[in-house]
Amino acid sequence: MFEFFPIAYVRNGRQELYQVPFQTGLIEGFQAVIEFNEGENYQEALKDLEGMERVWVVFAFHKAKNWKHKIFPPRGSQKRGLFATRSPHRPNPIGISAVKLVKVDGLKLYIEDHDLVDGTPILDIKPYLPYVDSFPDASYGWLENQEIPKAYELTQTEEFTKKLQWLKEIGGLDLISLIDVNLKLHPFPRQGNRIEQMSDGSYLIAIKTWRISYQVKEGEVVLENIFSGYEKEYIEGKKESKWDDVPLHRDFLKAFSQD
Image (cartoon, rainbow, N blue to C red; front, side):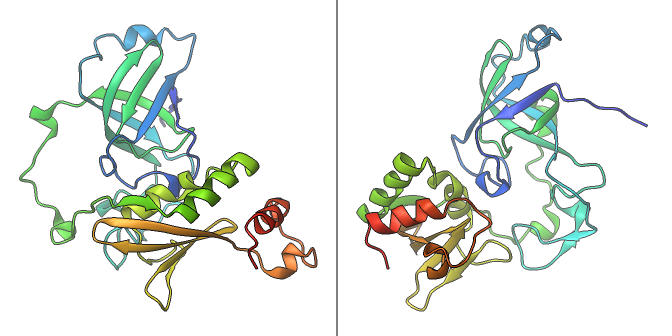
């Protein structure tokens, strides 16, 4: 038997899996901080790490519950064997990511281009060494003919921006952080992503109790509008929601005269 314990934790405020990329390096400048535990003199272990452009982060998939023999990967339309994917649902829920190291500050590592949710337990840090860790000519297997994902640029209409700011100022809801990664990497309907295409060619994504409409153009996702996802009965109090945000929705509808 083996026994492991966290030496650090990821801090970035993004606690939902859909708030982070499914691979490292897909969204440039995506930031986080790895905070090491105090009292273990880890600052000595972190010496000489400064100046290395990338590091391997070994971590635990702390939100994964059960492992699966086959899964639907983010790319492709059929199930694949678990060990031919990077799914978090593994017999031993351990992951590795090569992330960009921005700087070392005491017990904190500032990183970019990561794929880690807030609170991820870190098990180890190792230097990324291109001369032994990079094999650019290696075969991709079933991924050989898959299109390499490219991030879309997000733009906003005036209407969308106005409602987005209202929700943040009045309701303390940072709605953009709940959708930006999803729409930058996979803005089209696929299994489980709660996106549907409308009859006019636009798209609608459901994020918790909110709905967001948008258009997809060449390399660009245009965020058009924000709607309440509640039916009239919930707004009028005739039905009870499991969420506690109905009052915010009522105020939102009043503020923007939405039927």
